[in-house]
Image 1 (cartoon, rainbow, N blue to C red):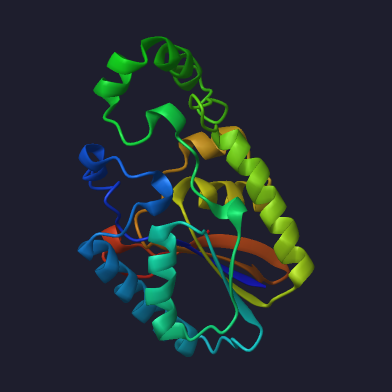
Image 2: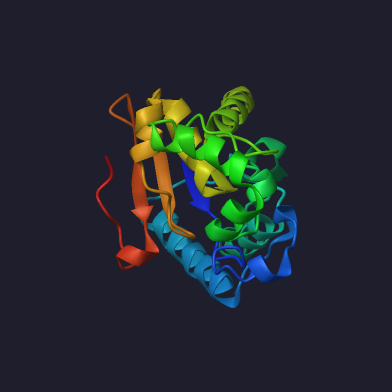
Length: 223
């Protein structure tokens, strides 16, 4: 099994444009830069698959049913031509609840008590457990992605492309390799349209970046 984990392209939430618009998170869309990032990621994947002779006859593309991930998936799949495309609700972004679409200073102003409670966890090595008011903690996302891994083990495709969000992808890796909450807290969030690959090598599962746009759109050593 090879699992390509791909974060969506730059969205209007990433650029903070949505702070003034206030769209619900599930319909936040890609910027023009995000669309270009997806095109480049698709070109990279097509070349990577050809150069490594990867057989896509038993492949699937899994997509978070949010607008920005659907857009990214469609653009990338123009280059790959994956016939089996599925959506899974367990792949949606961490739900930010009351803190969605607002600058940090505005959050402190509107919800001082809720922020103080959240920040107490966050500042005391509890980032993984800190629940966003009316939203989720990374802990909750990890429970979702554990269910997703059970789905892909059952379906038994050989090559999987997973189009999702930063927190989700980190918890997939955390669950797959049984990493700790401390690993989650210290691991940087993936940049937009970067790609990490999980695969077996000499009967050992390994993972790491194969594409990371801010580092020059180049292969970097996997760990």
